[in-house]
Length: 236
Picture 1 (cartoon, rainbow, N blue to C red):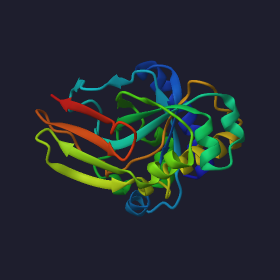
Picture 2 (cartoon, rainbow, N blue to C red; picture 1 turned 45 degrees about the vertical axis):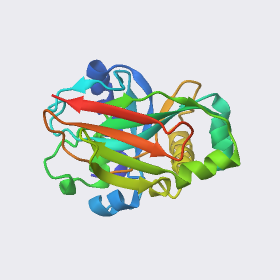
Picture 3 (spheres, rainbow, N blue to C red; picture 1 turned 30 degrees about the vertical axis):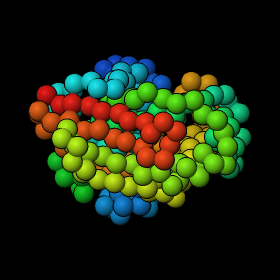
Picture 4 (cartoon, rainbow, N blue to C red; picture 1 turned 90 degrees about the horizontal axis):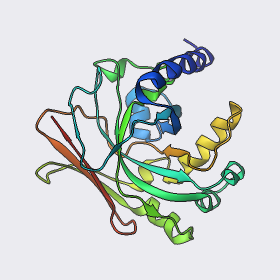
């Protein structure tokens, strides 16, 4: 399957997913973490569509919410205005973001062994995007200090007992999370799509995809960001 074939298939598959997961509310960048690129043997990010059936902090979700359910520590930003389409630097991108949300993505990997996926497969499958849990956002004050904090923050994923499962720096996403914003702007523009006010952008995973188990839960903490945001989910 070529990348062009995959993109065409993604558009049809996304139209099908909208029937079950709600209208499009934004986009995600996947494979923005070099470790995941290496895991799937694909050197570039890929794009997916986010859907309206987003969940909220502390929600209880069936562990079998998808055919091959996973959870990942992520982060979401909200577009303030369409001037973001002209952004060329991380600070310029930040100037056109209104809020930043802690986020746990709940993707569907489709296959039991993700190593069997190729880059085009992931494109076709909408980068696994299905559900996600949004925590309480904070309002953005666009400063060089916040750009630096996003790169230097530590993102900690812990289980229901507080045991740390993974920890990662902000630099895990393309060296700086807002590089994923710039990548999405460019990739969408190549498809004739412009971002608009209110669009949500998922910037990528700080942790590897892990399968949920009934009776467990996870919490993500963003140390170094204003207010030390958190988001959590439990599985039944």
